[in-house]
Image (tube, helix red, strand yellow):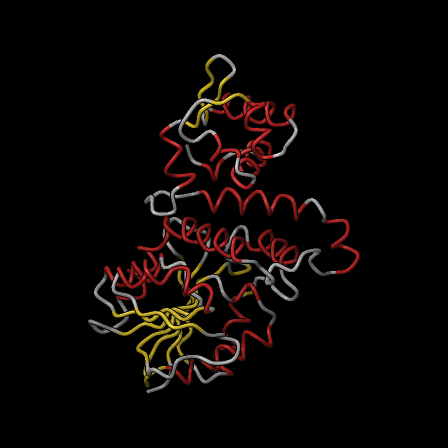
Length: 314
């Protein structure tokens, strides 16, 4: 089952069941809805409705009014070490649907109803594992595009790369990688990153970056979180961390080129104070102002996002 392709009703049911512990309650043995409701202090009627719908969806088995999570879904939905783990993604998508439903309030203020940056430990885990899963389809294509422009064994700074998906793809291509992300994200993912041969440093890239110098800096899904001033400031910091001739690589939706750039900008309206999606002209202006040259915008095979490349002068 491709959890990303579920309709909004199914996404809400599955995401809520994962978030509220219902899937864990029926993970290994058949249980009655009343038993699950009693354990979790929920409404028996509501729990039965969700369990029945999940059985109809093919996520649970139903036998004599007892429900059990099917083995094919147990790893992907409950085990973060599973190669196809999507538990974080289904909860994250459920949260997005809930936030989008508050659009009338957002239209009045121009700001998110909930502060997406003020995440607790569990919310951080959910978000990071969701980003890890969503990045998998395009990671190797991005690595191929970037590594073809770099020397062998190049050292790449992955800015905001805590989920590790792109860093792992760069390492597979024989690059050395340092991930720089918030300390709580590095702590969450450090064991996985170290096992893949990736260095990890905690910090806030809106304040500073590791000095390097690095052969390239990769910024994946970073620019859309911020407004123009913050993006320009970050690009200037990146320039200072690169060797002469080093590359900056920005992966994001690009207005005028990506089919869903404007729609994704609404997602940033819902979730951030100043985020947006930007045109190639805006990226070129920021990069040139920061001293970069040779700006290119490349399509990523099979993805709607693009790779914006530029070089620090030699």
